[in-house]
Image (spheres, rainbow, N blue to C red):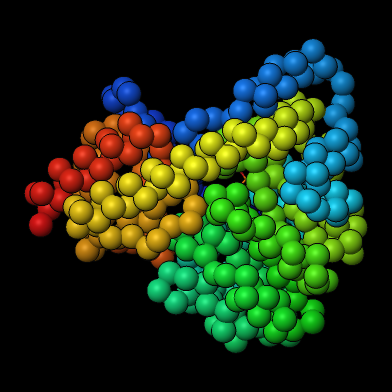
Length: 361
Ligand SMILES: *Cc1c(COP(=O)(O)O)cnc(C)c1O
């Protein structure tokens, strides 16, 4: 028996399960399990990455000034209050590390993103799961769950894996009514997919208790490079920069992200395409008897009659070379999360689900 033991709670963490990428023995696989942009990053981002190859011996910028400046310009926010991380996962980790420890509570919702729970536990804090209302964030339930020990409230808006979101007035009501010692974190990983939504920027600017996270992994198509960012009040940014490692982002990642955020023509095209194909796919699935909530993100949460039916459909899709995501781990055992791919992928999915439903019922 080893006497070398980790901190209490670490061994209780359930490992994060990523979306599968391969199916044994099947070629021509379509991966629709991780909400990636089917078109990848913009050409400008790829070119910036290529050029970065000539400077790989140099340490990257430690203050991420050029990228923060570009983010500030494009999103019309104060670049001094932006912090960049190795994916927004790292920003979530910084928040938990800085604000939550043993005895503290971290609130996340019933179908919330797994990293909130994992990061809370990694720091010895207690994750608290709060019910949603029919797969939608429930502000009253969150407020009711707050205690003297609550430190952080995480909500993703739009949420993953439900695809639903709450409006600006509900977010403001949540921020207004939280106890004074609680920081609200609005995870905007899918904010860019929502036409006219600022991801929570205005709420951050108006208050001292709201923080927003964003990512280059979804709409920008740079999941492989690991770049995310946060925007918050000065006092929070100051705290997070103390726990952030000085060289947490690579020089190539910084360069690619800077080019990506400025290429708004590309992001517009990808957003519009997603909106069109998402509506098409949701309707095609509904015609086959598979309903879904109106999604505001780049995926659809398809609802089946039972867990057995969802799993059987997943097996059928897999045999067809289509990888989607099971979400039983998110308290949604009768659902499958399907990333909105390009038109060919959407047609393949719709066809395969239709074939399955013909024999399933
Ligand atoms: C994908 C995702 C993220 C983040 O990812 P990074 O790649 O670490 O930036 C964060 N939150 C939610 C809800 C997500 O779905």
